[in-house]
Amino acid sequence: MKGIIFTSLADMVEEHYGLKSWQGMLDACPLATGGSYSSGGIYPDKEIMCLVGQLQQRLDVPLDILLRTFGEYLFECLSKMHHNYVISKASPRDFIMSINDEIHRDIEKLYPGTSFPFLEYINDTDNGLSVIYKSPRKLCFLAEGLIQGVANQYNTDIGIIHSKCMHRGDEHCQMDLTFYE
Amino acid sequence: MNETIKADVNSNVSLLKRAYSREKRARKETEEILEEKTLELFAANYELKAANETLLKQQSTLVKNEKLAALGELSAGIAHEINNPLAFIISNINSLEDYCNQFSEITHAAQKVSVSEKYDNEVADNLHKVLDKQDLNYMINDSKLIFEEVKEGLDRVKDIVANLKSFSRTQSSDREDTDVKDCLLSALKIANNKVKYHCKVVKDFDPTPSIYCNKNELTQVFLNIIINAAQAIPKQGTITLTTRCSDDYIIIDISDTGIGIPEEILDSIFNPFFTAKPLGVGTGLGLSVSYGIIKDLSGTISAESTPGAGTTFTILIPNDTRMDDINV
Picture 1 (cartoon, rainbow over the protein chains, first blue to last red):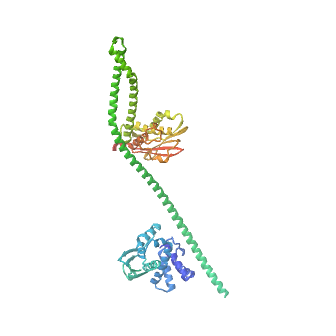
Picture 2: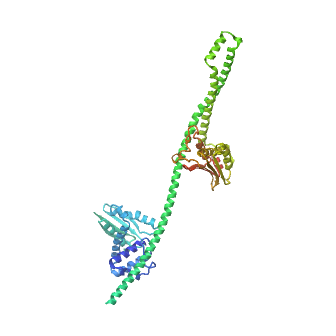
């Protein structure tokens, strides 16, 4: 997984719960990297899963809520680093629809070998859009948080209904979005 | 209490030390990634620049070739159109000269009659007066000069038309196995008078395989370039002739240390009638003819020049010119 996910998680934990909590999480996980992450690197998925699991235990909150919160924070970090992608799109819908074909494509060029979730866009109506999410990582709640992060970035609201979910036995996840002016 | 604070401080210091150590490793890793990406970018940029340069050169060559091909067609048309009237002009001038010669003989006979004592009569007197009045001797002598000049002019027109046809020709003829070095030496020998007084000639010949071509034509190409080189050297200079081989081509370089060719006209030097020489010194067909000859061999001819330093003509001829002959 891309290093920026790790560094963003570290930033979020250190910012809200202190350096001690982050150190505790690192100490509690068997990390091949020693917990040293840079945004440009790629690190094992199991390390982020373990760290998120540790955070959940420490905060005692449901995983979906934790991932949504982290998703929002992560989008803020990403948009600071790659602001051009945000300003080049006029609306949150345009931005979300560019993720698969533009953003993921550019990341693949810069960091060959990066694996991405598969996104598909259906039910494209005036104020609605459904996003199909498929990934063996099953991080759909993180994706939900990221979408919320997009809404924050554009100072608008996006209604999200997680109508299908791999965690509930569905083949893929589906998030039905409603864009409010 | 102090102990508690001390332990707390120690714990924080230890925490910060570990965080610092992680950050240091992360920074090092980032630097390594940055270095790697920079090298990749540098290599990619280098490749792109090289590819772009190649494309620009190919584009320029294509445009030049297209232009020369169009000029070739035009030249062939003009040559054909001029050739026909030229043929009957030459034929008629020759007939007219014969007639004038006969007329001249008649006039001489009449002059003899007019001054002969045998014909002391009014007719002879009148004839003498007419011959004197018209100054026929001057006319006859001047006619000879006029015919010489007209025939010289017609010969020049004939040469120009032949050269135009040569520039646009598509047929190979009289080909034989030819050693490039022999043609260079032969051209040098022919141009000797124009070279020997002010040029040092350096010969650097690597052995090259023989090529299947018209020996005289190839010699003509080298001759054109060597004469141009000699004319480009105002006082003292050097002409260097080199031959070498690559996998697919025989490469001939003819360099001079002359005045060079300004960049703005370098692209035009192979155009028919293009000349930078003073009026009357060149027809502007030498290099265009050379271009046609080399093109017929599926080769290329190009020039690089630095004004004030000299010019190098590079000719590339495929090793296997026999195949082209079969294709023709």
